[in-house]
Length: 229
Image (tube, rainbow, N blue to C red):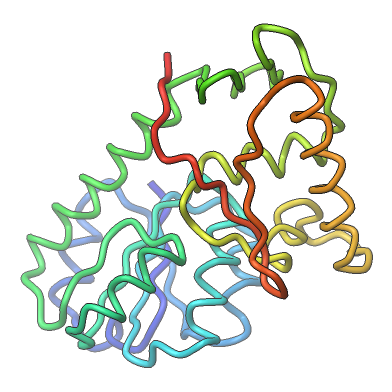
């Protein structure tokens, strides 16, 4: 497993770092700054552990963009902020777990393994059903009432990410990063065009409109109850 540690705490918590090293994890360490997204772009990480003591707008925006880079990434925040609002915002941004500082090293390692198991279980499912809508994660096919809906590659990637991160706000910037990775990116308004066309195709086929627009920010897939196989 490839792990990215983000934040100064991991340069101080020597015992935790040493314990993590003796597991099956391959570890990189970076500070939480502008280079974070560049690092995450370049390597395929299974788990990102983020020190989150300054939980500001930039922090949550970065978490959303990290999440959108690869929907399979597990993200754990460790923070001294022990208040409900911070925790809720962190989970809404897409983190998988929130651990308070100080923590027991063995407990955090156990949480890392548990989060990774949950993610692996989700992605072992090939087909997700949401009412009349079905999406095949293996073949990248989408069906409504068992009829194939023809989506472009970009439309499929948007729908897949929104479904896998359902209930989480995915910003337009995060969607743009997800679609184009490190390549030259078009104007961010193209995301609105893609989502508009995606919605129309799904609704014309008979699906409910599960995608909600958060004006000026991005989109959320509202349906929380799904079946998979």
